[in-house]
Length: 284
Image (cartoon, rainbow, N blue to C red; front, top):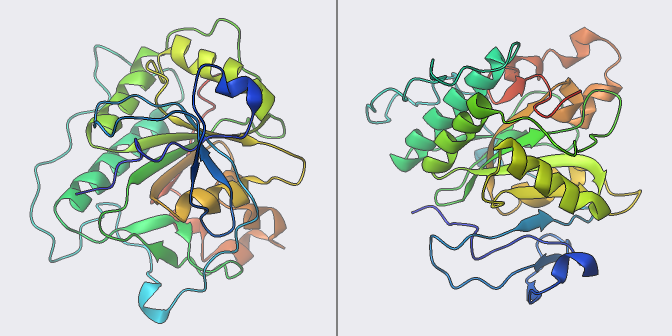
């Protein structure tokens, strides 16, 4: 059974966010500080708000057994039991916004992965196994880890700015609801300051993307705080099976330092197979 994060709320040490709540220390993972914002009763239905607070987390040195090359987009190893195909998405009754075809692929891939995990299959993570190499080898997800799909909110070249009154995004919200139904946690990643967490939470709720305020949000606490560090913190305690963003560095900062396109030949095939280029979900 997959380990739920309901009892492991990931929140920041930010006084404005703790009003009316009790802060509970959670054991540190790989040198990071993780503090729960709300005490939950352990019920599977307990709603939580959580924020990933990061510190520099060194990527673990993988053993030869832990390295895994990318699997086909179906995720299914040859020995995996046959499963029914994922439910049709998108639903014609709730069409996607223009240009969001890849978002549908992101949803279908993640849903298929969740079903394979439920059937006992071992999955490749969407996080690379080596902290330096660009050979495309991924971490291996451990059986029982909570499955997480990460969505980067920042448009290319700037930081996401939450809209005061975002439109309802019914088609996109349906896709995320499909993933939650499969037991996948949604994590929203941005370099937005943690002081804006309330505005982000409101925008996600009003747009319908996180109507219950239950998703993980991962924001920048200080200048030295990077997305790679926060992804690593989350990957240390969960299985990140898919990442969506509007540019390649949203998946891994190594893309910023490639000398040329050929230098990234080892990681480029992950686009569409764990990494998905999508249009910004809440505006450019």
